[in-house]
Length: 350
Image 1: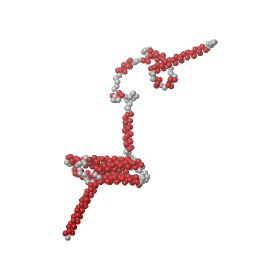
Image 2: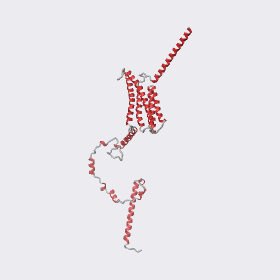
Image 3: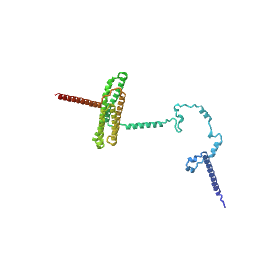
Image 4: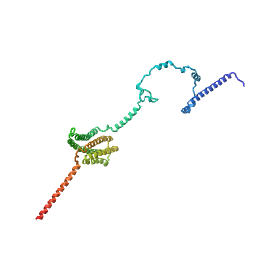
């Protein structure tokens, strides 16, 4: 085959580029195999798509020179600077030392206050307080109803506090022979006056709470409901006033149960739309004060149960009246029989 002299340089350049390309490819392949041998898990961490990524060319001769020839600028140690650093004293920072400074997280930045835990704790407490405040908030209650309602439970609370103080004064008189401000007899007399006042006032409050539902029915609040709503107003006084005939302890316990029953009845009525939406919270606050007052009175009376004479209640008076009537009937019967016997004797004598 004939050859042209002009084609020799072209053929020679193509062969030269092919040889260079094959050497470059073999060098890159060898380097990649060494990297995989040093890190066997690299194939698992990298996606398979990276296998077709083209490699960048770098000078392996420069790396070989830096790793085989000592005294290269790439591994030069400035001994003078090292000595200067060794002579430098470390400045103490005691404010940065704490019980957690030795167990600080790897990614945590020194000098930055970690407020995440405090923020979370405060956020939880604030959320709970906000829930309680919203649950018992009476901002929507009319001011007149709130003022008069709170003023209405003050007498009940005053009688309970007075009961506790008088009970303490009676105990003081029993131990020392004289009361602190009042004598034992005076304190007992005042206690017997306060007892019927508290029970009677409680009956009045219960009757008033029942009458509210009659007013709501007449105002047609939430529609007309008839007997179901009227029944609440009837049951309240029917439970309240018989408690005035019971002994003091039983009367207070019965009224405590009655107040709680009416609260649940009012809450149910509010849920049905028979009363304003704020009425349940309003009633809860008032019922809580009244219930606490009753508990205080029972505690005070329990401290002096064996030191005072029980005041006769209405039931005792009714029983005494009935006994006196029976005695008077027996006396009248004896007198009638005696009169009949005398008349028979007179007739026999004639």
